[in-house]
Image 1 (cartoon, rainbow, N blue to C red):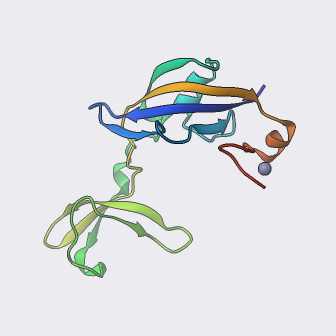
Image 2: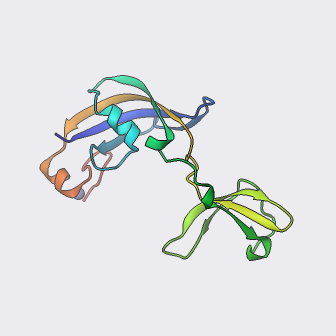
Image 3: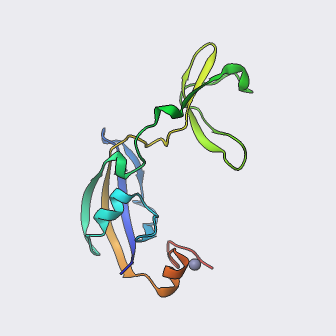
Length: 155
Ligand code: ZN
């Protein structure tokens, strides 16, 4: 049985810094087994039922993956249209269709090192969750591969 889950969550990093939270807004709604949330979180929520609260630790391998140092690329400064570039800046890189977000990891007199890793790659994550609602996915949702109605598609 594939379920539709609605849950509130607060995501923190190992320092206890809140990275994201649904508290005060709409709960996150997703269909199980549809690859809509990170695997390490989905596999734990599968064991829970409506009303359950849990703190779930997710290793990077089960979240946004490990960092790949091949994705740290030094680029000559003259290839950048603007010169006031600083560490932490984000922009889109690559050709239009294949462009992806990258961050500036380091700046020297001659080069800018860009980091194309996901910002949460290599970061162990902690989710504090509460299952607000759990129901069976409808046949139509299963055939579409996504949730309909509140928190999902309207079409
Ligand atoms: Zn649909």
